[in-house]
Image (cartoon, rainbow over all chains, first blue to last red; front, side):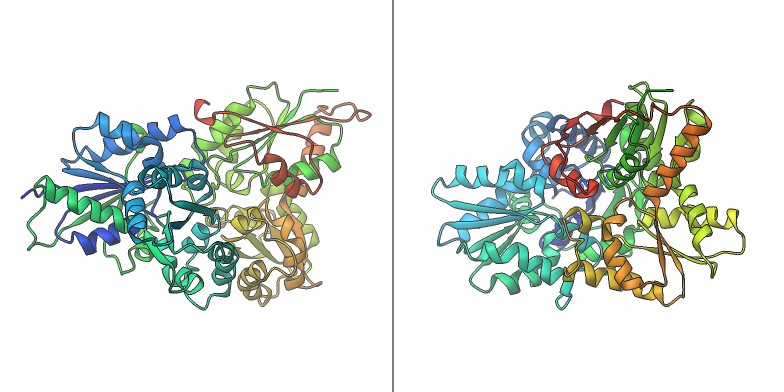
Length: 271
Length: 271
C-alpha cells in the first residue's frame, strides 16, 4: 500500500478529463494536478521549449512526494516522455502509447482515425506509434482546430447548431474513409463524445486518450505494488500558473460534475 | 524626415488588420511586424502574464532601430500600455484612446457599445477611457470570446451558419440596448464587419480600432516631425514566434490582399 499522491499535468485544463477518468478508475488515489494555464498551448513551441516547460512542470509536481506521474498532454508526451523518464526515478505514464494499444485492440478493419489539434496531428506521434505497434494499420488523421475553443466556450452539447455544424464538416469526410475506430487525441474531446458518436455512427468505436492512460496507470501501480488502500476515498489538489478565479467553473465542465475544489496559483518560472 | 521603421505587434496575426490600415494611411513608412503566434491568444490570460509577454514583444521589436511602436492588440493596450510607455524612450501608440475619441465623435445618443475579448472587457479600459473623455456617455460592453478562433479558422463570411449563429447570440442583446455606435475592440473583428453590420443594422456605426490607431500614429509622427518621405513606397517585414509556413495564406486574409511577403520565425523566449 502506498498512500503518496499521483501527479498529473497538462499544458492547461484539458487534462482534467484525465482526472475525471482517474476518479472513476482509481477513486482511492490522491491526485495533485498542475495546469500550466499561463503558457498554454504548448503545441506551437519548439521541442526544446516544450522539454524545458515539461521539466519545470515535473519539478513543481515533485515538490510533493509522489509515487507516479501521468502526463495528461499529447504534446508533452510526444516530445518529452523519454527524456523525463530517464531523468526521474519514479514511473511516468504518457497518453499516446496506451491509447494506440487500445485502438489496435479494437479495430477489425485496421483502419484507424485520429482527431486532435493541429500541433498533435503535425507531430505525427500517434501515427508513428500505431505503425510501430502494427505496421499493417492504416491511419487517417484529421486536425479539428475549432473543437478546443468551442468546448471551452461551453458549446459541446447535442442540439447546438454551432458545434454540430463544425463537427459534421470535420468528421463526415473522415467517416467516408471507412475507419472503424477513432482516437480522440486531445484531452478536450471526451466532452464531445455524444456529438462525435452521433456523426460517426455505431460502426465506429471512440477511444479516449485520457481514459486509456488512466487504465495504464492502474496496471502499472498494481504491477509495482504502489496502489493505495482501495477502501478509501482519494483527495485531489489543483494548481495553475495563471489566474485561479475561473478555475471552478471551467474545471466543472471538464470534470463533468460540480467541483468544490479551488485551485492555487503558483509561479512556474521558479521551478 | 525619419526613415526608421515603425514597429507593430500583436498577440497573433489579427494585428495585420492594423497593417492593412497603415498601408492605406501611411504607405511611405517602413514597418516591422511581430505576431506572437506561439503564445496566441493573450485574451484569456492574467494581467501579469500579458505584461510579461508584451515586454518581450517590445524587446524583440527594439532589436531594430525604431522610431515608434503601434500596439495592434486591444488586450496588450488595455493591460500594459502605460507601463510600456514608462519603460521605453520612444513613442508607443495603443488602440484604445484613438478608437474611443472616434466613437464619441460619432455617437448622437451617447450610448456606445464595445465588443472585444474577455480580457479586454474585464480590463474595463475602453469603458474608463470613454468616461474620462465624456463622463455623460453610457457604455455597454460585451465579450465575444469565439470571434477570434472562428475568424482564424476562416469562418467570417456571410452565409456561414456557424459565425452567423454565434454573432447573433452575442450581438442581438447588445442591439436591444439602443446603442448607435459599436466599437470593434479587437483586431480580428474588422473581418466580421459585414456579419456585424447585418445584425446591428444601418442605425449603428461601427468603429474599428486598427484604423483609428493608424490615424493617431500619423498625427503623432507629423507632430514630432518623424514622418518618412511621402514620395516613397514603404517596405514591410514580418516576424512570428510559431511556424512561418502558413503565414502567407493567413496573412492574406487579414490584409485583404494577396501577400508576397514571407515571415521569419524568431524565439520570443530569448527576449
